[in-house]
Image 1: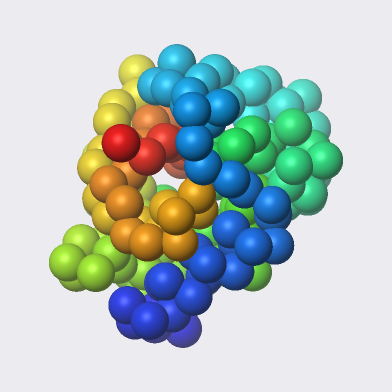
Image 2: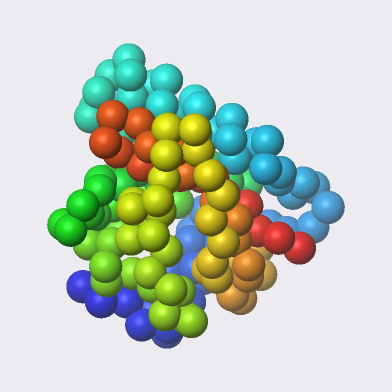
Length: 156
């Protein structure tokens, strides 16, 4: 399933409406919150294994969707795919090489290839749930047991 610009925007808009996000000063999401979300997800994965994916996919009720910050887990390699997505579980199973931002940047593939155990920041464009428009996103990605755990925030 290849996602085009219109589909990417539709996913963002649907997520914003369906999950009740709102913008404004109350959403002071930070790099530290994204890092903490990844640490929390890795801890749950270490405790429950792949059963943690269902928890992540439960979104807001699970504690893995907080404002605009949410957990994403993806596999690595040439057949890398989304394994869990707290904001949009419909992306589970989608191959990473079919997802690109509007500039054509295949950020999932890049994170899959370049994430390290120490973690690192990655920049790309993605629909901002608070505005429904494309926004600049910064995501923290950590390689853990051959999986990539990701959480990010929008630069405003």
